[in-house]
Amino acid sequence: MRLLLSACWLLAAAALKVSQPEAPTRHAPSDECKRRTALLQQAALQNDTVALRALLERDEGGDSEDGWSADGLGANGYTALIVAANNGHLAAASVLCEHSASADARGKAALTALHAAAGQGHVATVDALCARGASVDPVTELGFTPLMYAARAGYAQVVRRLLAHGARPGATEGAGYTALHAAAANGRREAAAALLDAGADLAARGVDGMAPLHLAARHGHAAVLRNLLARGAEPDAPSKERHTLTLILTLILSLRLSVPLTLILSLP
Image (cartoon, rainbow, N blue to C red; front, side):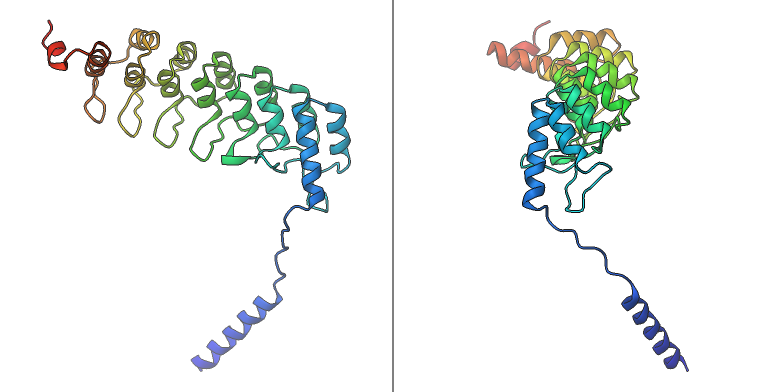
């Protein structure tokens, strides 16, 4: 009896498997799709809204039957919107978003248009993308957010606008660093100040145990160092490798003055 029931179940399962429709096959973009995507990117690069509208309105409402999409990736690995955002072409970005382009479409390394605009300091484009519903804290393959891009490049106004749109100053990338780490490591005093004003954690540690203060000291950024200390950063809090601010500064001084470390450590 059990063998008979088992056979029945196997037959039923086989029947279900046979009756299920096959998933549609996704074909590689045709040469025509690639050509139109290249034209769309060129129009975005030149901020040519007339050409953009002509290309986009040909397939108004979304993807076309031949596989072409406003979010298609060009030979460079990016969408037309990412190209527009990277160059601060607000008019082109607006036309793309008004039609079928997604504000959250991903390009190479999972980069979005907001990453591109933030990393190049284009405040108006950042605001426009956020107003269009772009995710404010998308992460790249390495875990970087637009806020980290702006902080690393020192675009304090972009940092403030992203924070106003809800970006999280405490978000971390693959190594555990925050946007404040990025600002400190690159000597971006105003960006660091904007993050601190928004409540960024002075004591946040990366996987290596480094706080923003350690990175500012390691890279010799005195202005950022003073600002972090003035905001209450603990100078003798050790990193994972037991590096303190005092030790890091001593090592830097020894290297720059070509003075033996033992001699510096013996100074009063």
